[in-house]
Image 1 (cartoon, rainbow, N blue to C red):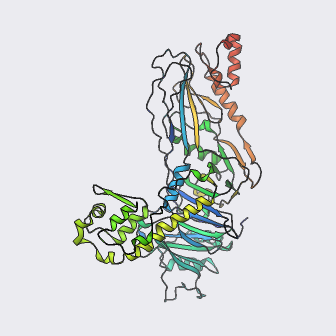
Image 2 (cartoon, rainbow, N blue to C red):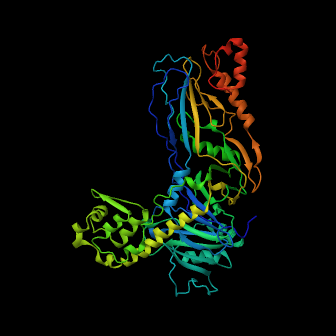
Image 3 (tube, rainbow, N blue to C red):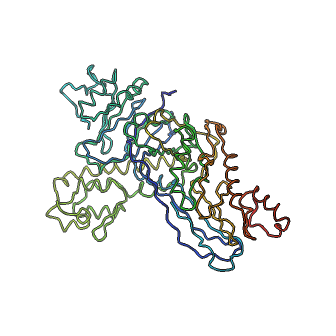
Length: 571
């Protein structure tokens, strides 16, 4: 059931997530046994920028609450072909978003796996086993006098509810009596229609939605694309994946971040906890991460989210988001030949040996507009030495330079200050993740705050235990379970081992309502596998770590002499 204070957003369909192996840790000589750890250290999953990423902020600072949805836009192609339709239940305020905020949130919350290694048994002080054997892992919005229905009072076309600019974008908010009015307007405006779109748009129109049509402003290039924000009343975020399915790919990644005062959870989709024993801890969890997540979601019916982080938002760095030195007034009457020096003095850029770096991705965009490099000259070399190319400077572009300060405020300072306001207001950050294919995009996910639900750490640690006395190597997993490796030192492929530890529904208050708990099945599967690897162990093999069932079986064989050996840890 839809709630009037919700919003549906269509983010562009992008490439499926790519799994990249983590960094390989260099082998380290094992010391004599006795508890020496040879840690590989944090092994961070690559920050995957593919798919859709949306940051929701629940703003409760005013007399009534608002939700802002900031959408990261990724697009490759011709600028004039970029167009985007967003279904919305209310006429929203359209904002410029902060790419730096997305970068920092993604970096702070990416799953991080730490794989430690230890040896047990009598290693004899020799080189023993290598300690680190695990590897890390087109629309024309101009006023039209030709009767195309772009004006609000035209009964032969859609009603225009709002229009304006947001950074590099133009936007129009429109509605109509029927979907034909909307699609006819899009056709006349040069929008490339998909034959599957009208029925889906009709669903949204019948549900009371209006549409925000967005394009790049005249003359803007694809390099100017930046995140876009939609602000609307209410506190129920939602992602409109029904329309996304037209251009989506199989197993498309969707990351939804929530800044607020409570952890967020899916309202109408299940929530899944992952079975850690399904990851490939030998070659690095990132090598199988998306595969395991996809399998777990399939076990929940194909539409579900996992929580990759839930906790304080203080982990998000503000570096590159905003700096008090970024004062637009400082650039209003700047001199041409000292302009770059002024930017450098404000910490916005630096140039060395003909290469420049920028504190904000939109700064290079603005320089290309107001101080473009002469034809055939490398832009960074040009900005590094304006005097060297003084006679070739495009003075027409520079004459528009007073506009730099305004664009600097709109694209860099304003979004940066607002991003800091969002982080300052919120206390909690949640990162939800899913992989979904087009045929599964039949229900838009809604989200709500979930009070009382525990935090989720994105730092996950496991330990590989190598037995110097000839026993099997195994992993102690973060949930306390253990799994023995094969004789070849690889993770086992166990047919009866589900990818989902638990499938549940998370209410607004109270504990999750478990729909399927696979803990007993996982325990039984791992116990049977671990026991099968313990046949013929060496005399000093410390297999007590591999499960109580296997331990009691060996006690029956070896008798009380087993107790003469002090275990390294107690289960």
